[in-house]
Amino acid sequence: MIQGAQAMAQSAPLSAALFALTAVVLAVFAAKVFIYAAEHPDPLLTLRISVGGLALSAAVGLAYEAAALATGAVPTISDLIELAFNTHPVVWVAIFSAVMLLIGYLAIHFTRVIGPASGAVRWWVLVAGGLAYAVGGLIAGLVASRP
Image 1 (spheres, rainbow, N blue to C red):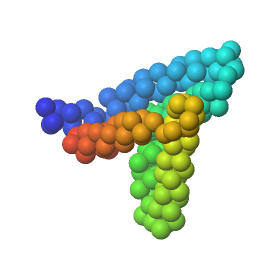
Image 2: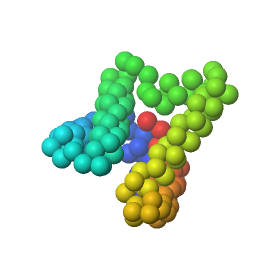
Image 3: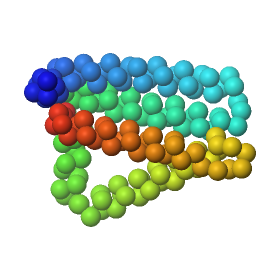
């Protein structure tokens, strides 16, 4: 089963199709979130706009990756990242660390915003996010998926 998953992950046409489909789904989701946010301004408006923006950004990245894999005319995102990290590793580790710190801060901030009136953090949200990240990393490692 793992060999089959590895073969599928290493197939450029299949990966391109999967990335394109996911990009479309995320773009539609982002549009729906933006429309809902515009029609229902409330205290969660900022969060809705952020989620829509993240979904749209991911859709753009996946569309680029799909085009890179399908045509071979431009380097894939993983090729660009590898080049950047190998060229200036200290700078990129610092940038990556700062981004991860910001994401962690925003996760804590938004779980406080949607938490009880006392402003307490909903730790189960953070734990669930960490588990999802770990499971995704484990699956990626098992199938050695490199687009």
